[in-house]
Image (tube, rainbow, N blue to C red):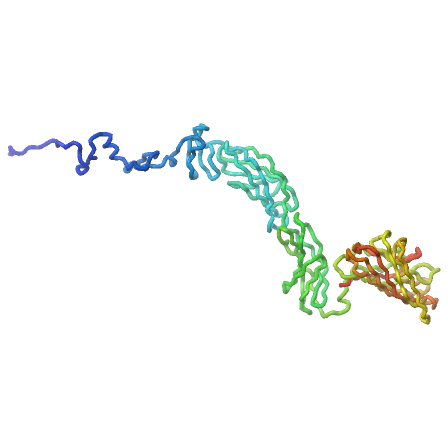
Length: 471
């Protein structure tokens, strides 16, 4: 049974405007009501309204894109930002290399410049840094490629930005370089070639030579090889064991060794780029206490199996203090009981030579003879030694010993001092013993020595002459 007093109210009369406590905006106009429902607008000028379906936020335009002329591009963009360039009338994308049109092939790189970067580079593995400008009138490159000429292995070198490092270059070889750019939208043409740049590196390892042991020392000979394109400044010999070193030109002296210990040696070469690999190790030697012979190195020797007009020692190495010539000899003339020897340095026949000697001409004589010659017409030192006739007796020889002082100096005249003796076994008046001295009035270093009999006769068979370096 219905209650007469019960009534259903089908609507509500809401006050205008609806207050915020009642779920409204508190605004009296539609525009204000809409603005009141948006996120705060203060400080968000130029941004775009975004919604995830539930919430709305303001986002900076560069997350999407901005527009304007070239000068108005964003000041601090990040990779992937888009920009519509109204000046060029296309979209641009920002990359680590700058702004580029999207969906376009890259353009040719320009201004290719190569620089040799040789420090510490092993021989025949030079390196260059190749810099260039990336073309900005085309699309963004995804790869930048450099090609050296002449060809290398690999033939190209790839990077994402300038400069690109090129390795494996041959020492002392000049290279030019070109660059091109590539992307999914195409490949640019190759750039113009750079100027030629010579690749350099450390030197090639020297070749080890003979090692001679002395008293707590050793001398190490070597042969130099390729410089790596930069002048060699130092050669170093190192002992094993001990790591003791010496520097200089061949042969290098290494001191401080322990007598009785076996050592091998290796040699390195150094230039402005660094130090080479070591040579192969030498044969082992053991230093020993000083003996007279340890002050000499045998350089060359000749024993005649048939007559010869002269004997020459060429290519004499520098690095010794003096030279010494030792020999026994005879000549082929039957008409001469004895024969003077002549000596000539470097084949020189224009400088002045001089000679002085004093001696005894027979075992029973006290007569001493002197002879001085300092004429510009004298093209050799004569009479520094004597030999006997090969026909006087089958077993007689003249013996001689001569020392060339300061032979490698370029500031001193070269002096020869000698001792010679001869007995011809047939004429007691020609059994000679005397001392001689001579000089070559030139400051050139001695690199070759020629000795010969004076009177246009030959050395006889079995004549022996040896050359030594005096330390």
